[in-house]
Image 1 (tube, one colour):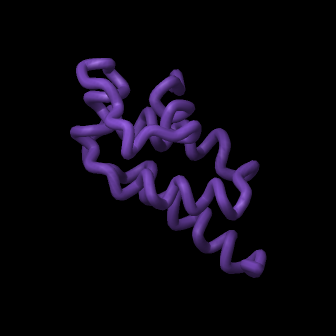
Image 2 (cartoon, helix red, strand yellow):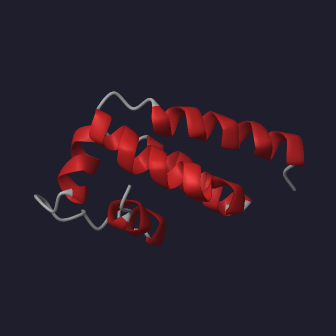
Image 3 (tube, one colour):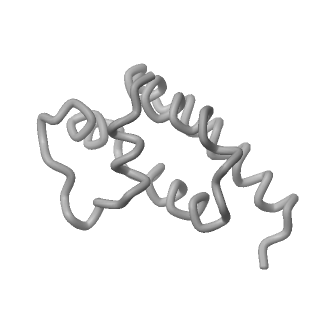
Length: 87
């Protein structure tokens, strides 16, 4: 079982990573989504978000703007929620 301080550290790290992506559009989309929802995420949600954070900005932006469909290996409920998020 993950300790609460460990989970809080991971949440804070994710918030920083989500709001400092390098592409402003992804800062707004991903950062806005994480800012709004992070406090409600379970440990499993945090782990899924950590996996999503490793996806390059250019790929996520192409998916968010519907230029390219999300590849099956990246498809998840969390990613769908992020892509559908309206800042």
